[in-house]
Every structure is written in C-alpha cells, then in structure tokens.
Length: 45
Image: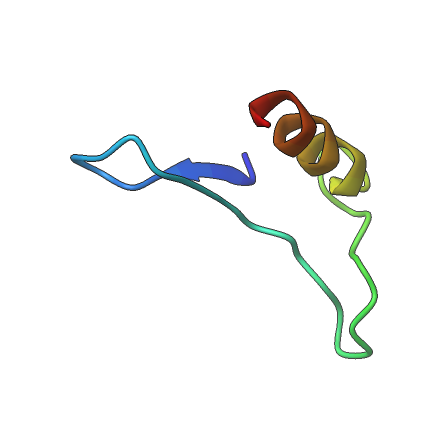
C-alpha cells in the first residue's frame, strides 16, 4: 500500500512509484495511484 504511517505519530506519507523516465508506474495491484493520493489529500483538508 502506498500510504504509510510514521510509527509513534499520526503522520502519513505516500509512496508514488515512478520509472526511470519519471513517469508514474502502473504495474501495481491498484494501477496508477495518483487518483487515490489526491482523494486522500482532498478528504484530509
């Protein structure tokens, strides 16, 4: 899962995998994760 928590805190961070050219990788089980990250960030605001 690309959303990780910092142990002992309530902080979260996001892992976004990119290829050698800097393009988002889509080979994960959820495909492109950008939309999920944007949804998480917009609901946290």
